[in-house]
Length: 371
Image: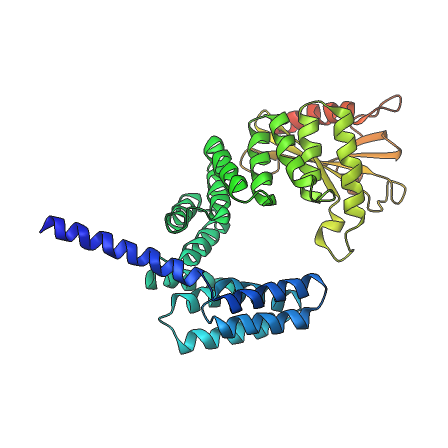
């Protein structure tokens, strides 16, 4: 009896994997339509791309990749309401479908997403995308343990899914399991060498471990194909600063400035400037931004540094520190520049960023110590 029970369980597991593989393998015509849609999207033909995606979906109704591409393009072109209506109707017609639940969750309002993804995993425990999406929602909710469990479930179904390895790495990173996270990101990068998120995640782990050279190698893997990637350039500047390689840090900063200036003004990051440094302090840490927005105390368009000081729990013990320079790096370190508090320090001659960073770190450490 025990042997037959074990055999039945093995057969059930095999059937789950077979079903997952079958749903992940569309017919050739649907796959061709998806490729056509992606090509049209890249050539700035959104309407043609949507038509091709609809064709792929009609040829493979449960072809998840085609639905994902279609949903994303609807959202990008400002038709999120249409996507919600279409996929709500699909779920109403087939509420017992894990695919329908998952696809609805992707376009639903935030309160309805997790219940839909959870329903997908309950309806079909072998459905990769349900576990992956549930892991993402748990990660967003800062529930690293639950997120990691979901991504591990997804990887049981598809061990070669680079996205799930990245998700697991993000969960492990959030739980401060840096070496485990690094291995997950490395695995994702091996499976999909062009996956920028894998290399960026590995670089963040190496940054936290102060493995500066390895972090910069990870980032160069991104920059070789995307030389204007702002996320990679910002992190590269931070890691070069961490290594005290000031010329290399300045080179990355210069490239990051150019990438930042190329952003459209409607991009939220346009008003934030670029993050050029991050360093640990006793009891907290400091993040450094370089901004170019006009400011009452600086010439319009001149760079100025913003030193954001945080306790270890993420709260702020003080207002921001600013170094405002009228000419290059010659200026004044102040606290809460908009209300005029300060100055804290002013060099008697023009100095470079390393000295400004050192002085800001001194005052930041005093604020963290309650002084």
